[in-house]
View 1 (spheres, rainbow, N blue to C red):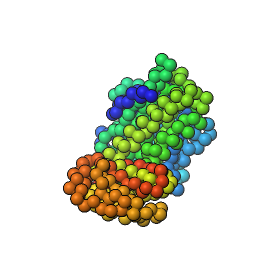
View 2: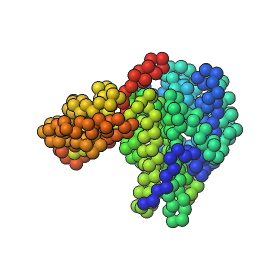
View 3: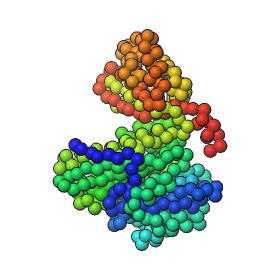
View 4: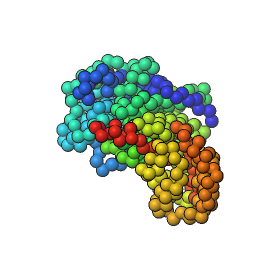
Length: 409
């Protein structure tokens, strides 16, 4: 099944049926000439689905968007998103401000007032400067375009501590018709499974109903955004939105050809995987991206527990930063996940270089381990040899730069 993929693309402006517009309105109150607000607008009402943070403390825009998707049965007109202020822990005023953002956005493009979802990211516990936000929405609406330059500006507008925009585009041809799936995302700190302090917006020109979009998004998210960890913190604002314009007139649903369903899911997966990897790769002050791959577990849940124990271990993360192949810390973390592993069956590899086989260390390979962990990206592969289940987690190291950066954040 052929999927064409463009890394670092123009993002949502690649998808027929959608326009984006960005603006800078100084939400951070730092007098900086920085983009911090974007509108994503469907030319016609579109179907949509969302996945949100599981944190008990949910930001006002998360609660608002969840409610709108429920009430509208997944039929919306667009999304307004801002960076610089999370509108989280802001009580009833935060709820009112999230609703007002949606209403102003809808009015700016001539849509019903309940047609917009709202997403925010940034500092927690501060009220939005709504006069500035309103001006930003007005400016962004005037900038709405499907041009690549505006797509890239939109991707830039949602960044916080990120160092670069994150975009990707995939496409395939079905019975002579091209189908496009594209997205952009942000995320660098407060990154932990069940998503992160992250926003991701994905769109397609396939004709997909809201229920099928939700199914597809859940499947992709479980294997991508929910399989990353930078610092072990879960945010209040995590949101992934998937929208479908239907412009291509290629209908994807439960009744569609099985090969078409597979192609569509593959394209959505590819975009979500790419954006998730970009998020980990841009983690706050990191120097390493490590693929923690657990194999041979009794269940997927066991494999996931072990991967998360390793990926979130401060001792393990610190050793990665120090380029020290301390496999003992891996074994220790795997053990305190308490899944009932058998040390005598445990295999540990750095990339393809064995460190432990059936519980027996192979110290003569230490020079090769050291070479592996010097790279910016490498794999830690652990086979429990207890079953056939597996799980992969993308994790990062923990640096002194991260600590220093967050002392004032």
